[in-house]
Length: 168
View 1: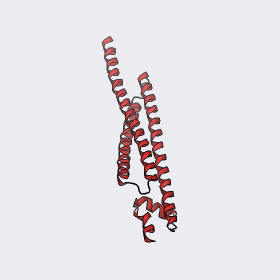
View 2: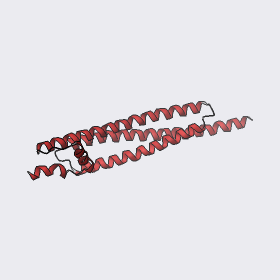
View 3: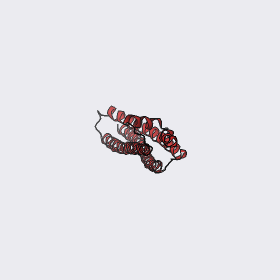
View 4: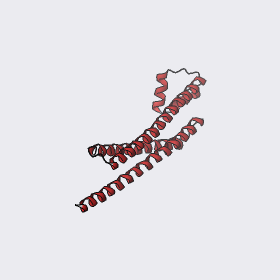
């Protein structure tokens, strides 16, 4: 009877070791997303401060954005998987379940914080880009509606902004 309890304890230890390694890996991925978000903010500033942004900077930003999305999806899936496992074990009220819930909760909050910062940076970049385009067009004497500005932003075609300058 004692050996069964010992085996269960050993199994549980192995399970928790695996869980903590998943937690650590997920935490590292969230930290990497956070670093990428900071890098994206720098690229946003470079793009906004350059009279004509370099294509390489735009390409770097595009690559970074793709990396952030990929990692965010991976972290989101891992957190959902952890949550499902926790829900399956809900019946057993044990110390390790409480630990897992707590770790999952901390990581989920951290992930939401990082993604919120990223979304805020994207919105800020978009608004500042919109303002810049509007100023450039006003200089050329072109008046644009919000809808036209949105179209220009969506197309990502910088020649739209300069066409008025070269036409005059």
